[in-house]
Image (cartoon, rainbow over all chains, first blue to last red):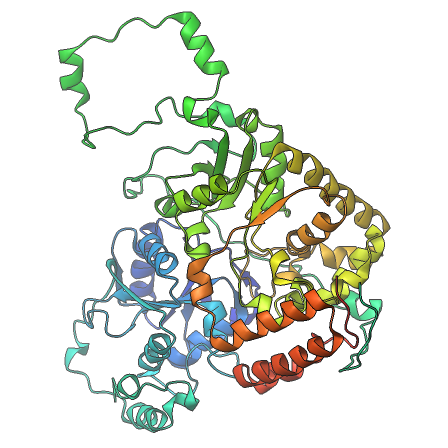
Length: 211
Length: 392
């Protein structure tokens, strides 16, 4: 993969059209982003683009990912953070797993959720484009948390969620382990759960998975 | 062809000016790089590729050893060298081997599987010959591979040959062996094909109207193309039976088929290019066709070419025999409505019943309005519902 860094304000000035996957990595710390992005690109063993987006104004992870989704073109679109550590061939293995299983969303082995949740993920753009009426990848109401949980539930409902433990993209959170959840996001998730995520999720077990 | 006409819904066709206003993407940033030097990628589990299609003759890259190691073990070359010495090579034998394809490529049915990246090799089917097309750049995509294979030594002497994509298993739900078995069990046909997108047979009059929901202004571009190429554009709105639906260019065919099909396509493409309004021609060859980048930035050309198979089979290829291979995995995915809709449409076609076709359209529209968003229905439902009922 290619590693390209761009400021959020300049993101929509280019036409990002890629034959393979695009992984967007919103970042606030340039040193961490470079270290994570360059290593991940060099270990991907697949063509594609790792797009590091500098969130200077602290717009937030969800909004940056959504903006990147709306201005890029690619068959696959994924998200990761500046604290990610990529295992060898992580992207090649992820793509193989998605194609083998006809999946729509893959959760990487993040060393945390054991596949229950795609905290770092890679989705089919054709599928992701149909999730919301707006051109959004994540539900735009979330700020920091639960957007990935909702996406995972939607993929499970579509019977297209794939977890491949050999595709490693670990979240190296030295200090976040004890961090609390963003309460407004949790409240929104519960609210959306009750509505079956705009009536897209009919399985109540799925709907209440992360509530 | 029935001539009864039922008015159902109408849409004013776009003018050529509107088509021209679809501006091709001018600044496409392609981010495709090979792994950096020194990167340690995983060892590949499959044998080396048969060929690189783009520039080199197929034989030049045929590996000298196609048979796998029987014990599936990595041999230590040093130990082997100590145990036995290599006999001298007969220069005549060496020269003969260089001239002829390996034994595997002498089989009467030769099916190649095109791939572009290393990681795709693990998904290839062992029943097919891996075909490295990583350097292929033609906008014609698979069709360019067909043209090159036809001229290449690798297909000479084959009774049937074809080139499928690396996504064959994913799309068809079939193993290569089962595909070959189907061919062998139904001998005497000129072309074996399939349709991995089975649901389209139930909900669209034909694949041209289906294209309108996948590629911007597909019908208008296709209509201009047909007119320029001298083809009958009634094809675009007529009802086609499910038996002729084909997508993905999954053809395995006799040399006779390829000798007719390839020049036909070439002639159609050249004629259209010559006669098309230059502004529409620019759009035809632009990446506007793939507005979300789901198809590697493909132009309209490959999407038109893959849909011309049915027309070819009814015109220049009318004397050829075709066999459509059923895809049980894909059939299983059809719900009860899709099964009924497909059957209803096929009966309407078989009996040339405009009344039944109109009933199908109503049921189909009801189904689509229940399974798609309001925006989707507002955008497409009228466009994909021609004002008159006509059968091919």
